[in-house]
Amino acid sequence: MTSHDMSSHDLRDELASLTTEAFRPELAEIDRLPTLDIARLMNGEDAGVPAAVATQLPRIAAAVDAVAARMARGGRLVYAGAGTAGRLGVLDASECPPTFNTDPERVVGLIAGGPAAMVTSVEGAEDSAELARRDLDALKLTPDDTVVGVSASGRTPYAVGAVGHARALGALTIGLACNAGSPLAAAAEHAIEVVVGPELITGSTRLKAGTAQKLVLNMLSTITMIRLGKTYGNLMVDVRASNDKLRARSHRIVSLATGASDTDIEKALTETGGEVKHAILALLAGVDGPTAARLLAESGGHLRSALGQAAR
Image (cartoon, rainbow, N blue to C red; front, side, top):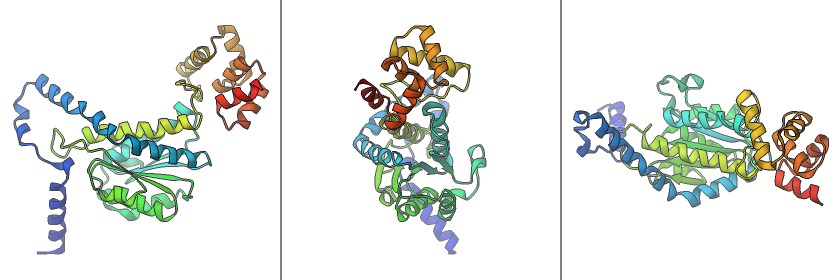
């Protein structure tokens, strides 16, 4: 038997042992069911995902606090994964600038095989830990950065390699997987393992595993941004008004936060260059645009802190 045959055999054995890859004989006739029955089955499967995430909430919260502490010092949040996991990381990263007005370089999504892998499969990329090291080295990681390895199986070399390399460089590391006792979790400082069980279609981890990863990534980025003062209550006060919809949303956010008249809101937004957070502070504290900007700069962008300063 050749070494290739051996490695293929070992890999088959390893996949067979993974919860995410398990075969469910009771679903072997699923293709013969009416469409509505299949939809009901899928919906029932999906209903269990939040409960699986719930078991990991203390770990998620600990990871968020560690990420926020580093990002407050100027660090970056970097996701690294292959296939579906990589795409979900890129998606989460790409949605932070329009939602929280973050610099596009502050939250970064790395996918094995590069941007082309977002829409097509890049053969072999997920099997390369070296590729992950190269991708991370291009970012010039510092100890204030965080690298989140994302992998349903928890064994993808690209994700495991990214976490191992980042940890060796002193960065914070998080491993997000959907199997218990995964190499990815073992490699990371913070382990988050959301065990959602076997998929409806055997091994199709873009389903429950992908949904679980999306939920956790939503939490990591959103709660980190809340901790960094990117929201005021549950309002997106750092939203960037880059189109008509967002300009209308900006007006509405200022209205919800202040209860001011439309005329006063438009005046405040004009005076503050469309900056929602500045306009709210100007209206609530009765200060002008430059003063609002100064108070926010002094408070590190935290609107509640700036309001407290203005009240003194």
